[in-house]
Structure formats: structure tokens, C-alpha cells
Image 1 (cartoon, rainbow, N blue to C red):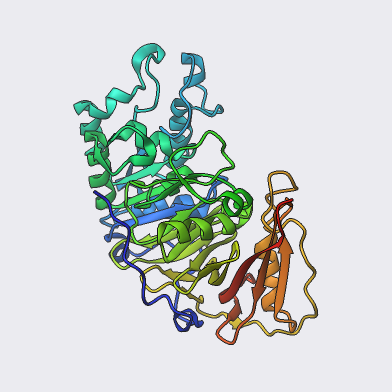
Image 2: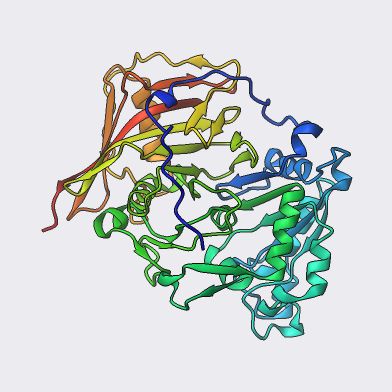
Length: 437
């Protein structure tokens, strides 16, 4: 049975002070010695065929450091819907489990890796019987995975991974307390331990332990709270108590993070499930995590967030005391200590700007423009402003929520050598400003 991780007592405000440490240069291949430790590559979504991220996965799938030709990646795409026809399954431009297996196989082969598309998805009567749930017990599939030195989980719906690769009891999702691995998942775990486990979007979410998010938006999360289970309304905040596959423990994980304004839902879920640390990864961005040290470096286009909830307190429908750190390419994160660490060569950001303009859709609502990094951009303006605070309201009203960011004495902000702005220890507060009518 999985249990909630212990409180991370070291996630204090003092622990978030900027620490300048050497970091692997963006795009540089990891050394052979480093690649022998098992790693996780946590991709926030929209891989966009990013060469730096793909190269990192292939390099880490070569545990002996002998070159990409030694990397063999098992590709799992069961989070996507099943193909309805053999023609759909054979078309790598479509979005279904079989087609996605073809697409990712070709993609990783371009970087020198061998691949094996794992033929398991939610199909029951797939034409040709190629992809089906009972192949999760197939010795022939297990034997193929036994040759792999890495695993890649594609995007879609993370609950499909649970349904195809595990047996969970009892049947109601909200009551799941324990899940048993299929033979295929057991083989995938062994392959991940030989080199790397990577995943994008749902493939990121499935890597966490207890209380895996199953859906929801920030506004509905604060209006209605979290509910255990897999909910009919995708905007309602749901979670699976038994969690994901547990490749990365001790932290809740969320995808498409500042891209889709998910800071609000992540804070709410962490508070209701007793997690003191959340890791959120943006689109076309990855955290390359050493699973033995729990230290990772950020690569890609945007950033990774750490939300420290150890001192957070809920009151009057909102929350105070959340500390937010945001690491970008070249920076590192330490998940054991809740630290965001500056890339070597970073320079401090001086707070010289004027007042920060309020935002009217701070959580990037699906009803608004969406996907425009509103809260992330507000944070960057706040750490560079002499005004010290910035705020914005939810797009929805009745009730309406305000998020306020405050630069405290412990807050640090820096510009990385690539010119992006990162920060650590920014205070985040959520409050109700207009009650329900």
C-alpha cells in the first residue's frame, strides 16, 4: 500500500535562498559516469520534437556511456485512445496509441536509439489483435522490454496507464488503496532502473507516487475543493489516492504548469492531500532528475516550479504562506530540500521597475485566452519591481479569487546565462475578493 510522503521539514523559507552552483550547460550531453545512475526526464507537455530533451533521453538510456547506439527505449503510449481501424493504427500522423508508438519510435531512432513500441492500450477488440490490455501479461512483450535500457511514456490520460498496467482494488477509483503491477509494468520498472524513465504530460504525471492528479482547473479547485476519483467533469479537481507508478516519490507532480495556470490547482491539491512540495513543469521543458540524489537540471524552453507548502495555512476560503520558486534552463532543483539553484554564471536581478499591472485572468481560464503564462509573467515583473507586489483575479466570478505575489527579504531573482529570469522564495497568497452571489 502506498502512503503519503512525510512532511519535508527542510522546505523552509531559508532553504529557498539563491545558491549559485555549477550546472551542466544547456544541450551538453551528460557524462558517462552521471548517466549510470537511473534518471527520470519529466517533460511538462508539448515536446515539440525538442532536440535537447530528446538527446538527453537517448543519452541517459545508454547506461554504459558507449554512445546512442547502445540505447534501446521501450515506448508506452497506452494513455492515448485506441485506434479504431488498422488504417488509423498505421498512420503516425494521427493521435492514437498505436500511431503514437510509431511516431515516437521514429523520433527516437533519429537520435540513434533502438525502440520497441509496447503493444498495450485500452483496446478490447482491436482489429488484428495487436494492441490490447491483456498483453500487459504477455511473456513475449516482457521479453522485449527486458532488452530495453530506458522507458518513455507518451501523453494522453494518465488514468489509462493505471487501467492497462496495474490491477487495483477495490474497484471504486476513489477508494483505491493498493495496486499490483502487471508483468509488463514490472519489466518497465527494471528497464527504467537500467537507465532512464521519461514521460510527457500524462507520461510525466504517472511517474509520481501517492495522490496523482486526474484532472481539474485552478478556479474549480478553489471553488469546490478536491475529490478522490476520476471525475466526469474535467474541470473539477480529482486525484487518485493510490497514485501513479512512483518513479519519483516525495513530491506531487503536475504538467503544462505555468502554461495553463495550474499553480492554483496544485496548491489546493497539495493542501488537501498533505503534500508539502509540488513540482510543476511547463510545456517544451523538462527536469532531468537523478533518481538517487533527487537533484535535477532544467532544460528546454520555459521552466519548472517548486511550490513549498510547508508553512501554508488555509483561511477564509484562501491560503497564505506558499513559497514559489521558478527554475529555468541551466538551473537546478533539489527535491529533497525544496531548493531552486541558479545556473553557474547567473546574475542577480535588481528590483528597479515601477508598479505591476493587475491581471484579470490570472489562472489562464479555459473561458479566457488561456495558455499565456499570466501568473508566471506577473511573477517575473514582481521580482523586478520596486513595488514588491503584483496581483490578479480569476476570470470567473461568484466567487472571485485574487492571487497576490510578494517579494520578501528571502526572495531572490536571477538572470541565467541564456537571459531568462528565474526566482526563489516568492510569497504567494490566494484570497476570496467577491463571494458567491
